[in-house]
Image (tube, rainbow, N blue to C red; front, side, top):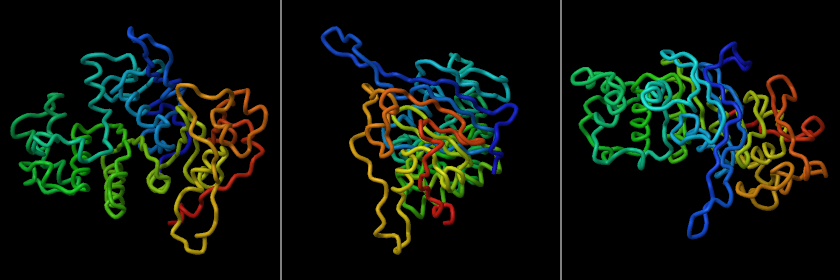
Amino acid sequence: MADQVIQKEPLLEVRELKKYFPIKRGFFKRVVGYVRAVDDLSFFINEGETLGLVGESGCGKTTAGRSILKAITPTSGEILFRDPQMGKVNVAELEGDDLVRVRRNMRMIFQDPYASLNPRMTLLDIVGAPMRAMKLAQGKELEDRVAEMLRRVGLRPEYMRRYPHAFSGGQRQRIGLARALAPNPKFVVCDEPVSALDVSVQAQILNLMQDLQEEMGLTFLFVAHDLSVVAHISDRVAVMYVGKMVELAPTRELYTNPLHPYTEALMSAIPLPNPKRRNEKGVLLSGEVANPANPPSGCYFHPRCNYCVDICKTQEPVFEEITPGHFAKCHRARELSLSGAIEILKQ
């Protein structure tokens, strides 16, 4: 496990990242508002660690991951990446060849193992594409490197002439993993890489990812909504709600002692394989998820919060360090005693 304290120089540091999508209406498509998909996100990731990023669907997790890689252009903010060849760079400002060079060390694993692979390309073409585009290898050398990458992810090298339709979902995700890791990157955004797979296959892919992380010295941003999976693979966990980060802590600390009511609600929704606890009721949230185009005043979570007081409705809380390494965005973080999910860590 990586250290839970910030190193002198983190591999990735995100500062006040925002991504707003314009809302256009009328014949002239005038901008009448914005969807605040990612709103003032700040965190760091140390080299060699895994940061889990969790939250409900639509909270901005995937948008944050794509913005960090500049697969979509962020509205504002800094994305400081310590590139082995280029040094410390702000990815948000890079264009052209510089952006291509930094993407050798910043890669992404996509959620859907069926939609993310071109059915008209063989495994040689798919896995070799990033190395060919970055001019890292060609010809016989390219084939040898693709064969080695396929072996690393548990596939036979002779499969490289086959097409994606010949493989199962778990095998396709291994192909996606091989493609992402082919240029030997330092940092990988994992966008719910196991959510489309069976539980037994999920465990195989997660164990493979951990083995490759240790073997290749990888750093992961692991985007997911399944807190059981996140507990298994993450060193630290960040919780998002409607584009904002509401809590960040080391994994054991977060699951043992959550400080934000939204985190408590997520914990209570985790299904536990314990028949003795079958009839226990979790934390029930009222209302709907806040609209990122028209968020409520004060704390975004206050319309659904069971611990809401007057200040929550009018004043936005500050994202601050409550205990060493444990950050929360809640007015009552220091006084509430919330329930965690320590059972998940024991599995």
